[in-house]
Image (cartoon, rainbow, N blue to C red; front, side, top):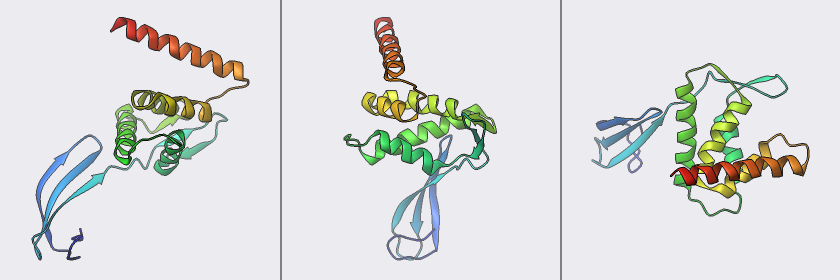
Length: 156
């Protein structure tokens, strides 16, 4: 690691904490004594996504992030929440413990995590990546979603 203050490569790790998909390290530069934190993220390189038409492609974190950012278009959300959302989605994928998932399954994970953060972004993402033939199809799915939310609220 390079010290952000003096650019020295001589530093030591003071503390490490790990989560399911990242490692947070507290470091100290041995040259200038500056303390800084690094976050090492676990990348999902070997995951294959099976698309609706049957073609397969390697999981692309940037592509997922781009789609999520589009769903938050003109929404007031900070960068930290988006990164936390991406982290949650990645942890859900890791927990599946598989080499290949369908784009539908990945989309459902994203939708579930989005619904916990921002319902408008959830609907935007659903509209962009859902499989709708007509506006009536979308209206029916939205109605079903609202009904399930109502039932969840009544149970609480």
